[in-house]
Length: 553
Ligand code: AMP
Image (tube, rainbow, N blue to C red; front, side, top):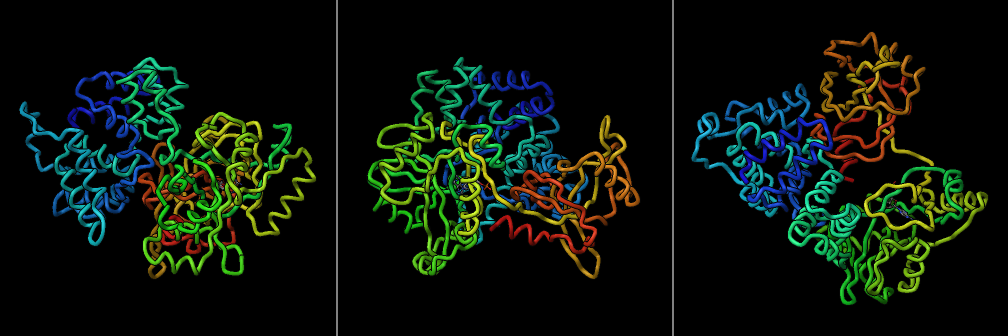
């Protein structure tokens, strides 16, 4: 399939409001003979490789903007691209607006004899970009990407920009792909879901479904050496856990980094929460498991760092080690790593994803001599409080409460694992925009646009936005915020208002993510309003530099 045809299909999907019709459009595409279903599925999800693959594009927003600028001609600068992004708000439409194609005639006249790029060719070039490493790699990647933009007409440029930044914005999520595979090849959704959970490769599952049907899907099993997504936790309270379950499993919440250990009976491989192979930088964890793990297994746990006296070090130390490529022996002398394993999804030939936590823990304890996280079952609130206090005293982040009857749900942030920690991460951001609400909230400003300082020269401050926040505020507070912000309204387009940067808001968040949706290149995950910082001026807000540091740490 040619990229131009694919781009037209994507546009159709993007403009389609109904989920059911989107599924139909995807199913139709699966039926197209010329389609490499593996690639199509990954691209639909804004991915080039499966999540666990060592191959990574490593294209950040700034490299992408540079590539678009250089493909657009010598008179277009990166600043032009960034300014357009600030007004248009989304990089795909910016790439579409600039004419990156050097084959202008061809696209405008719709030549019969098309030399247009195919999806396979695009995939090969993206593969090349991923393989470029070492000195000067950024510049080399930029050049290949810029050449790709040269081969794109406007619509293809829209989707290429989004694809390399992993944000397709076409309203197709993993659920839609799962449902489309199920509908196209008449395979029960649960079977497709399971194959996806154990393989983490939507392209592969789609291909097996098409080529071998339901039997093919059943062939896809947990495999030692192929990481699965980690089960995740929600923030909650001891009271919620006790009211939901008869017994609660209580564990310390370690302040480290997630690790998945795979042992095939011969060698150990370790994977991070992002499914990156981190075996090499963590030799002490490998040695520990070689000594203590007696059977082939897939274990889930956390690695924490301590100094030589055993005092806890911040989790950034572990993440730094994950990225370390050289002088690992030296790093090992400076920072001690300790691993705690709290789950086991495969033990000595037995798949345990569907077994209750209490049984998985029995398997864990039977194959791991040392290194299991404590596992205590109780229904006594006072006892849990005591453990919580002790955990905090011992320098842990808080406690994890788990439902002992629950199965392992890869990649799910469900209600069976609850984290209780006393503090949340916060940032001070400047409000640079807002939106008039609907219905009951029509006279209130909400959905506040959050910005951070990108440069601060001679009191001439420049801001870049990092997201919007609309949760964590009552109606009364919204009314107060509206009166506070009203004097600063600079302009209004539809319901959106632009505000003079004046009010600083303290915002809680879960994580900083890279994102092409906002001009800072980052977004806050689950932002919520904590308080207006009347004591702060816009110049006291966080800087983009700090956000970059937090993101990298
Ligand atoms: P958070 O990163 O705040 O969303 O908390 C969830 C993370 O806590 C998990 O992804 C693990 O990396 C980590 N964690 C620490 N201790 C435990 C534990 N006992 N059980 C499960 N996850 C834990």
